[in-house]
Every structure is written in C-alpha cells, then in structure tokens.
Amino acid sequence: MSEYDLVCDRCGKALVPLEGIVSWTRDGTDERSFALTHAPCVPAEASQREEVRRLVWPNEFLRFATDRFSYRIADPDEVRAIVWALSPFVVRHDNPAEMDGMRAASFGAIPGVKPGTEQTATPAAPKEGAEVEAGK
Image (cartoon, rainbow, N blue to C red; front, side, top):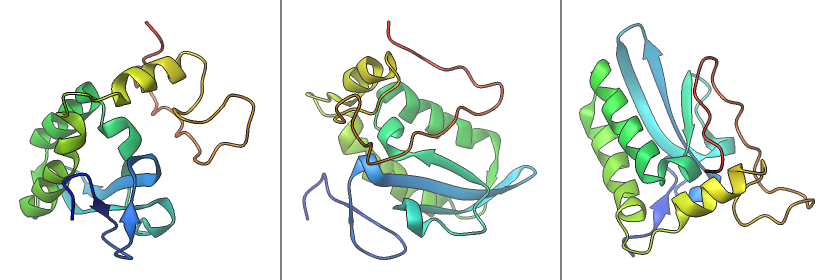
C-alpha cells in the first residue's frame, strides 16, 4: 500500500480525498466513534462530519486536529489513525490541494470539476457561525 492510499473504515474499499468523510459522535464534551469513510458509509449515529477534501488543506487539517483538544476523546487511537492517514496529503512538498481548493472556492466549485458540469460530490453547507474562506 502506498502512503497516499486511504481505505474506508466501513466497507474496506479504496477512498480518495474528494469522496471521503471523517465522522464522529459528540456528546457534550465527549467525542467517540471516529471513522474515515465514503459518504454513503457514514455511520447513522455520527453527529459530526468533515469532508476529507477540505482536511487535506494545511490550515483545515491543523484546525481539525487542534479542535479535538477541546474534547475528551473516548478512543484517541481512532483520531491518531485518521491524522496519520491524512498527514501525507497535507505535508507533501507539492500539495496542490489547498491552492486548488481556494481557487475553486472563489467561484463556488469543487476542484477538478469543470464549472457548469455535473459535480461528483456535493459541497457541504457551511456550519452556522463558521467563517467561510473564499478566493484571496
């Protein structure tokens, strides 16, 4: 397996960042049941989710990792495995994900999808009160 291979925690099939979701359950100050999956494989009990296509951006990756410090995590190994799985995408010397993401976000599209065509993934709506970055 290559360092850039991701595998769905539920179905065991290959996963690319564009179609991946990190999901978990939050109960007050506790977080549990972290999973890296395809969108259709997200567990029904998951109350929180992040798109992997955004988590491979360095700033979003750091935000996700540091946000976990605010909560008590039932099984830290689940989060550790996800952070280690995504880190090669983030720390690549040639990481085009953040630049492509910002460029695409400037006109409301998904990287790699030609504007005006059928999109292969649906962008998530911004969380209430969340700051939305656009093109710079």
